[in-house]
Length: 259
Image 1: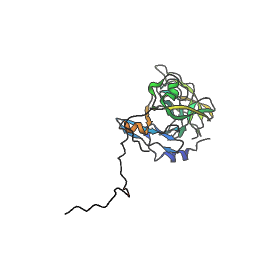
Image 2: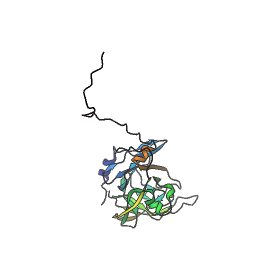
Image 3: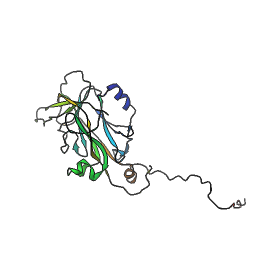
């Protein structure tokens, strides 16, 4: 399914997001369709994920030029599966464009859905990289001397190479079609990670992108865990226990107190 740009922008205009000056990052629960509210503490944004729910990462380019977004989930590049580094491949968004990334890219035509799951079942842990489970990050790059062209969908870079010291680097890219209880326990439960879910169609084509700099112009991140764990860690305020009025609180009628 191809994203309609105007509709996508309208959908996120009032949503809680990790806003940067160049790129915005939001997490969408695909089971409910809701953008997960962010809770801020010590300079970090946190969201509460629901175990076994599919989710999407919504990216918005806030600039009038193309932007390369290198996407890291649990410390793993969501396009290549490598241990994440800003110099790797990523998604390229057109000016003011919004897209939702639905999963780990498996080919030019498929992704494996992002799902909230127990840390030991996360893709990062299953591939021997559990240390950075629980965070989603984007390294954003501006484009050098962008070529003006009409584009109806964001792009995904597939052959990024490190830049030489005195020059920017070039990379091929592909056009991505993106679809799109109150806690009572005092101690944390199993931490959440991102699983490697079912396959889903997401076709791509190619383009070219030249980074304006070797280092990212901006990095944005959102940390995630279960609602129960965020409450236990004090990131989300613990709900106050409220006693509802009871129709039969006692056995007999007592005399009222004397004044």
